[in-house]
Image (cartoon, rainbow, N blue to C red):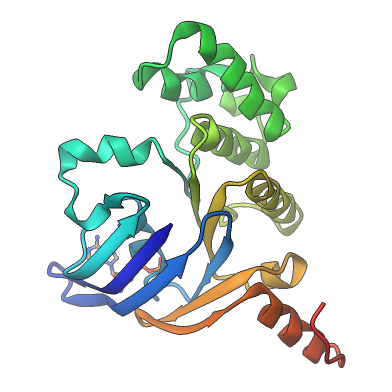
Length: 239
Ligand code: ADP
């Protein structure tokens, strides 16, 4: 579904080699943690997936799109298939929870009679149906991130990208957010989530790709991750 082939990214402005010859394949339906310290290239890699930056060398393919070759006026087609959430929620503070989510469908020309059903479905998934008429400022940080997630999934994307989605949340709320992302994944959406917090993997194991200075240092399947976790607990079997 996603293929990065020998992707390198050099930022001229800062003379930084953010990605070095990265090759990764991700299948439809996978949950992937992208792990690495700050500055290791996680955001840069994710931006390649939704066409925000173009590789200096190599290719990025998503389904039938050669993302690395899409022109800026063709990106909107890709963006219908990909939802993105960030550490910052980027909500419109003068719109209600409902309107923040509906807005995405309105600008992409979805028919009026479908909008309500789809917005309420997304709000139900994230557990915020009861908040539909509230303004974001009357919602907690965790709830605001849920609005952002509802907005990202309301057009039923094949891929959900979450770039440090828990960066502004306390540990308990972060864990709930993680559970929500796994729930969305179980409904068939591929999820790629960046984090510098390895403890998430212990709570909810999945494939882990670790970046270090723009290089893929390791790429472990879920079973391998479970083996490592069990190993640290003194057991030696794959669950
Ligand atoms: P991470 O998400 O792991 O923190 P980033 O992908 O944001 O890593 O950054 C990787 C490297 O690329 C860092 O050294 C960062 O300073 C640099 N970088 C990121 N974005 C830009 C940009 N837009 N212009 C110039 N340098 C950038």
